[in-house]
Length: 97
Image (cartoon, rainbow, N blue to C red; front, side, top):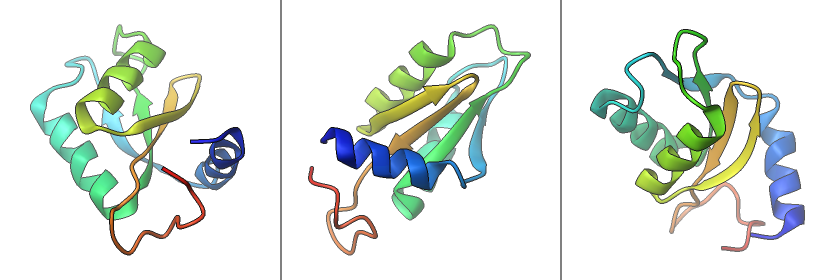
């Protein structure tokens, strides 16, 4: 993924609500399943590491991205943006994988 692609995804993600919340239990199976379902439906998601979670946001987001086979686009504060392009009928045809 090129820098321009990441820049475009960051701009799109700024308007998105967070659809995955990671609490004090960390990356539990329900959180991973929820993130997987959201990624397969939306391709671009925002996740939030809650304040009560004693986790490093960047490390947690990178682990989640690796588990899902997704690309970590950005981490700002307690929020991370993940992207996984669909093989068919992608809304992000301009992104080169």
